[in-house]
Length: 548
Image (cartoon, rainbow, N blue to C red; front, side):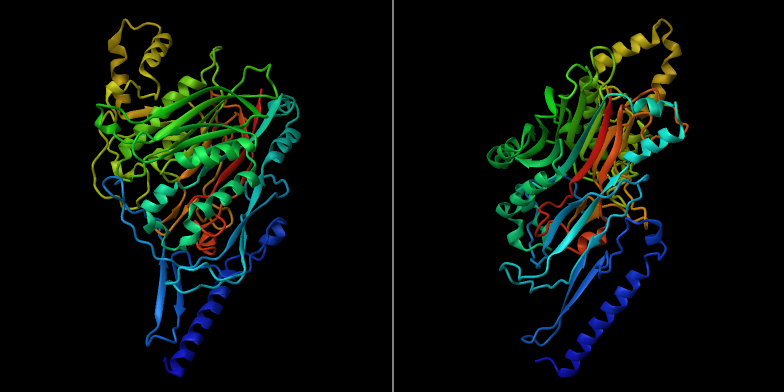
């Protein structure tokens, strides 16, 4: 038995720490924010510290106190390669029940709508117990619609007769897009050490699938881009369920032994399939491309305006995880962009608007992310381990080779198929008689890769109220953003900087998005997966307007 004085001391210490931390959290919210933003809901709750959660457990049957710690950082565990079977280590801890709720906020002029979470009291059970979690009050994650549609109307009112006002009179097609890594059951079981914070019952597929299906129903997206879709589950459950909800599905499985892949679903009432193009990143005879990751590109035609020749090019991928192989990640991305370039080019010479979704295993601001957004990357002297930004202190200093991928791949530095690239170069230069005049330019671009799309992210990646990073994936080892919805922005899109001139009109405007959360919000519901959120990734959802 623990002496009475020690028991009292433990209870007093925990109560004192809890009270002081509640006070410190509440002090971080400006008192004037509620007055400035009527949509703001001030959370009054005890959040877990983002990096260390400590629960003091006093046992009457042991002669010592057990202290359980949960640690989390933004560093992912790295390995030289992705083994077929990783170490299994599962240590259960009871999670707090959660339930996802969707709530639409009133329209706002800017992106700055805070994502909040409301919670209730929680309780933990013993680590060693494998029974069902004891009955607790449910915690509910609240994610809000951030509505930007009023931005375009306000701009038109301020500038009558402008091109913005003319755009409001064009034919339009509004649609929503979801990107969601649903966590393959095979990968979950082979990487059990990433989910040691979860009780075992909630990790079973029989528990997870109904929650994932409910996400599809609640968010009701017109286009779904799914990653880590396990083939047997896709054929037996996911595809039939989506078809019953009115979706048509396209699927591409990995080329190796891992039984998952990428899927794209779209509502038959909103779109018809023009063409589907699977992309395999594995290439025989090219050592750089010995991985089994894949992509999928489809061309869709809106059904509301069948007379229009405008289509939408939607691409979905899951790039290699390994943080130390940025050369492979960039090459896989170049292959996907080359396919997008070929598929999106219309017969009239115009290019279809582009949606690019997926798990890119790269963080915001990394060289790979910047390449997608800026359309250009000079990689001379860039370390392979810094390409994705997954590690704050990357191991190894090996630099990217110049060029990154071999000529035999057939893809140019402009991320286009070589045959088409040479044809375009011939038409653009017109005269190739003076080859010496273009030789220095070719050499200069050997250490630079480009693409011609004006892509931007549907998310800003940082919360406006305190600058905290938005989180798309959260498990025992890390919490960060790796999932994205990129789109080809129209010249009048709110993401386009004032005064920026672009020759490429992506034709898509961002109307709204489903807000993301900070790390401490997710750990307040025991991270991901949990009782009601059955993937280690959050679904991303954005609403766009296509103008003809």
